[in-house]
Length: 84
Image (cartoon, rainbow, N blue to C red):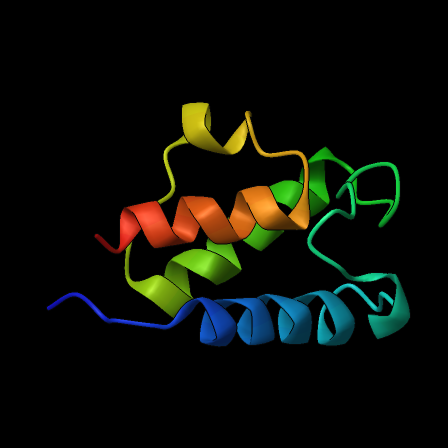
């Protein structure tokens, strides 16, 4: 069964993951923030983030989709598309 989340719920969960698991200051997290430049995630962090989002959504983010993700907004949009 597909879980349904609002955009706000997705943003809140993503913020929670970034602050709790990656120790990123909530002040740095906004939709335009670049995951790699602004939030200083590396490729291993990106894989960890994808896994955590998979648990959240019960959907697997395809590697080719995740490679295109650059910003927090890209992550939110990708999750929204997965849940359609």
